[in-house]
Amino acid sequence: MAFLRSISKPEVAPLIAGDGIFLRGPVLSDFAEWAALREKSRDFLIPWEPTWPVDELTKASFRRRIRRYQREVRDDHAYPFFIFREVDGALVGGCTLSNVHRGVQQFCTLGYWAGASFAGNGYVTKAVRALIPYVFEELKLHRLQASTLPENERSKAVLRRCGFREEGYARGLLRINGVWRDHVQFAILRDDPRV
Image (tube, rainbow, N blue to C red; front, side, top):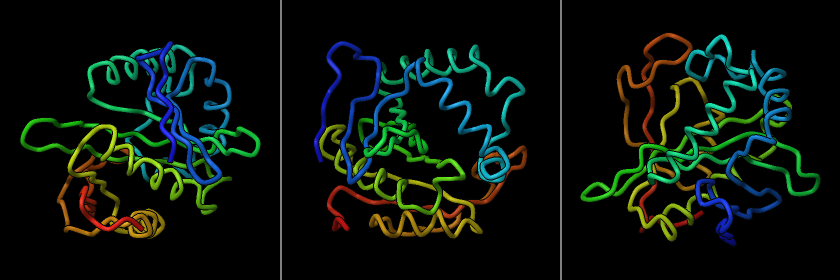
């Protein structure tokens, strides 16, 4: 995988090339395409995500999101990416590396989503595979972890295909659509075999 660091915009996550996809940090000009994809995918995404704010799909909310992303990247706390299809540049979803911990822990947490019309086509799997070397080789972390709802078989399959191992059950881990939900924990370590 190629890692192409952004020189002119150090507050944006870098461009990462993958297999038929590429990932890059969100920018304000992505708003219209992002909002349209999220709106079309609302019913598909809501069961798997935190409660959407009332103004979730407004430009003002997106602008605040971009400012937060810039701070998080600058402070080495999180690295948000949008996933684009290489053949036509279409936005298909997103991935975020969040909760970056340095020192004795050396890990971050992976989250991801795909638009309803792009789900099940392998884009998220390809994006996660592209991010794994970035986490271990560029960010120099030891562990990448992810959680999924127990009934989300599609998400569990993505993680397993990418070499993550199931580690157990976390009670009331995340508040999904307004309800504290149990999650299945997964992780991959720097020295684990790559799939």
